[in-house]
Image (cartoon, rainbow, N blue to C red):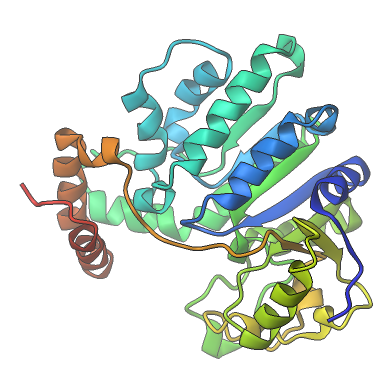
Length: 318
């Protein structure tokens, strides 16, 4: 498949220089995208292209803790882990790459004056896991999640006129939503579609390569063998843009074209995905007991799914 690839680092820098917001879809349970982003931020001049990251991975209740950490203040490991662990889907953010990214930004900020430090905004609204009506509170928070993400971007980026990189699960960052009734169990009007309607060409969307489609995987693997390294393709006018999204990602069987849902395609090579809890999470008996308490208190379907996940990960119910 012949595509107009560019080196990914240069392409991301160019897009941030041209657009107020770049929306970069992430792939859960793999570290390469975040390690690549850390290298990108450490490249001279790149950190000057943005002032804000808006991220999905964390509970907004802990924004002050994260602010203090990124400013170089002393923050305990347990308090920093809680930023991730207390999210609505805390286990999703268990990969150590998230904390590596935060550590990278903390170090980067130490070399920058206070007014030029990069901010990280937790888009998930504050949530209290000690709420007396926990099951109902969790359902309400889940139902308004996309609204909360959108309002965070409005407050933290658009209203003050900042330049931002958004880091969310890729399915939240589709340029268009869905209207088909058979897709009602999916997010029909995601964050990306809402921002695209408002911002038009001021926002640029990047989709990460992680399809299960064997033909596309084979084509990209063959071309990567030439040693091009991380690369990004602007999709307009390419054959890749014409691919049916639902064939690339059966999880969302949309009949829209890939080029209708995103602007760029990021290929970082093979992204092995494996959910494995860090040893410090597993060693924290207080957290293990608490996550089991949450699993038992959540709505039936969500609670059972979390309990099964905990069992697969070897977290004992004490």
